[in-house]
Image (cartoon, rainbow, N blue to C red; front, side, top):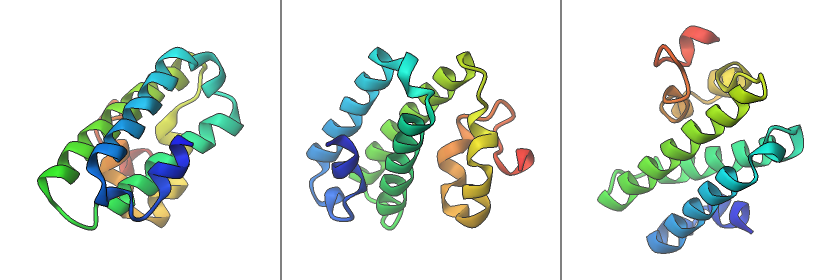
Length: 120
């Protein structure tokens, strides 16, 4: 349900709904972290984050900046969860970043050096 909201191209028209969905994802990440590292759930979360980022990156409004901040927090949380499981998020998403440079900023916060492109 959260992924459906976050991947909807028109979700950014309802900022409160989108912010609530991202907060819900943050709660899922925090409470269900042992299962998040499995490829099925990990990939679902990454897909939701990427699509949401792409949709809100189209405009630079105050609302979209708030959404981006929540997305960056979710990426940092996901990165920490995966690191505990021995998975490097930056390495995992490097092929995506090469194909779609718009998402570089999304995953910069997951990188220890601050640059996804340096790990590609």
